[in-house]
Length: 281
Image (tube, rainbow, N blue to C red; front, top):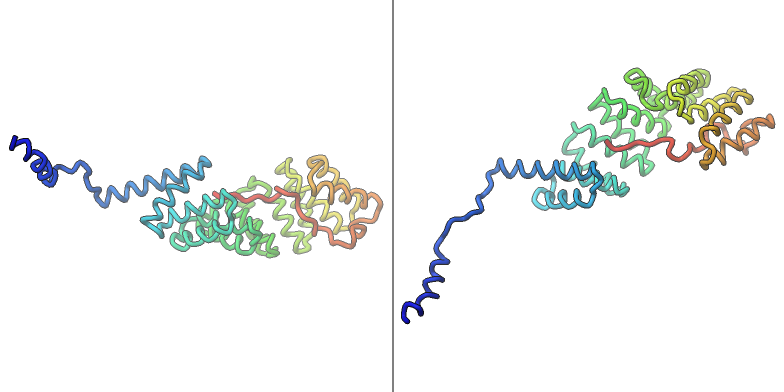
């Protein structure tokens, strides 16, 4: 009976005796490897559009490593995909400052700014990406396009010529170059460039729109109307087609040209939605 009464006491004492701990402490190397593995997994989730899963991993990492550039930048990419562009810009700018040699991170920063209409700031980030990876025509094309959108036509021409030399098949590079030339009133050269664009990419409807606008500037209404007709054949129903291209044909065939459009200078018309798209790498 006495032994039975002591059993609970002995059991409690035994519980206080240190035993074998099955959970082995991780070495610093193992911790670093686990962190890298988590970040790679999160990046893969972003690529597979599993944004909620990726966000959970990044937030977990940031709890213990609040300034880790890969986690900050990764979360910025998540926000970019979620179209939360202002928050994405803040996170991506912080990550770029910590890793100034990451070209794709710079490109993502440029896209977050471009989507907010910050063309000059977007051009700056795209320019940094292109400088870090000068063989990437995608980076150069986005850089030149945003310079053009910011009104820096001469610099845009310089960059776009470089891209065209680097990769003549870069999508729509000659149309972008034509726009930059037209923006500087180099109309004859712009027209030749639009023709080259049409021959390079048969699907490039904006090469026809650019040529039409340039013909108008040169006072050639007949060829301008022909180019607008070619544009409409490729795009019958967008807002740009209905409010600009189709109206242009009517006024040009009436012989009034751009002056009939309320005095607007040709070339001021907005491009159709989706004509210019930059994507995060």
